[in-house]
Amino acid sequence: GAGVSQSPSNKVTEKGKDVELRCDPISGHTALYWYRQRLGQGLEFLIYFQGNSAPDKSGLPSDRFSAERTGESVSTLTIQRTQQEDSAVYLCASSSGLALTYEQYFGPGTRLTVT
Amino acid sequence: GESVGLHLPTLSVQEGDNSIINCAYSNSASDYFIWYKQESGKGPQFIIDIRSNMDKRQGQRVTVLLNKTVKHLSLQIAATQPGDSAVYFCAENYGGSQGNLIFGKGTKLSVKP
Image 1 (tube, each protein chain N blue to C red):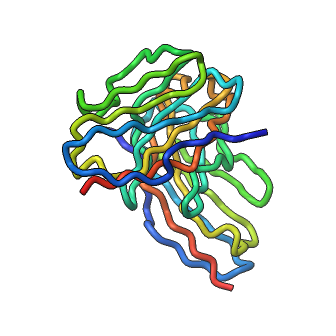
Image 2: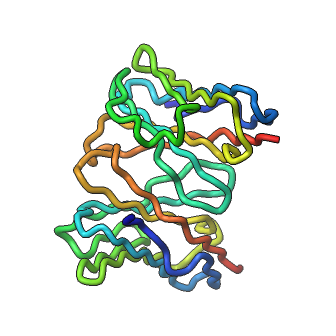
C-alpha cells in the first residue's frame, strides 16, 4: 500500500514568510509524528498526534510553530514568520498506535530553505 | 540534559566486511532502543529494536547489542554491502510511548566496493 507522503518535497521561502507543510499518513494509522532534521544532525522531535489530539506541544521550538490534524488523516505543520534557523528537513511519520510495538513509518521529508 | 550520542560520525568499510556502529546513551531510565537507517533523500527506516531486559537481538544480517552497565548500544552489520551505505541513527525511549523517542546524531556508513 501507499506509504507516508509529504508535500512539498522542497520549499524555498523568504525570511518572514509563513509556510505550511503537509503530511499524508498511511491510511488507518492513528498516530502521527513530526520531526525536524538539521543538516548533518539527528532527528529532533516536534510533536505527535494520537487521532486528532496533540497531548504534548512542548517539543515545538517556538510559538511560531503550530500543527494540526483533521479527520485522523492529513496533518499540517505551519511555521509563521520563518527564520533562517528554520531551514531543515521536516519529517513526518505515522504508526498504528503509540505503543512501542508499532513501527513508525517515515515520509521522505520536506526540505525547507529560508533565504 | 541527557542525550543520545554516537562515538563515530563516519565509518568506511570494505564490501564484505562486518560493520560496527556505536551509540552511547545517558538516560538510565531508557528502556527501549531502536536503530534506523536513512538513505540519501529518504526518511529513516526501522532496522531493529531492543528492550532493556535483553542484551542482544539478531535480525537479518544485523545484530544489536546493549550494554546497560556502560550505557552503550551497537549495531553490527554482517557482510556489509553497498546497499548498506546510509546514515544510521540510534534512538532511545523511556516511558513506553513513541512520543518520547530521542534520536542520536547519526553515523554515516560508506561501503567501498
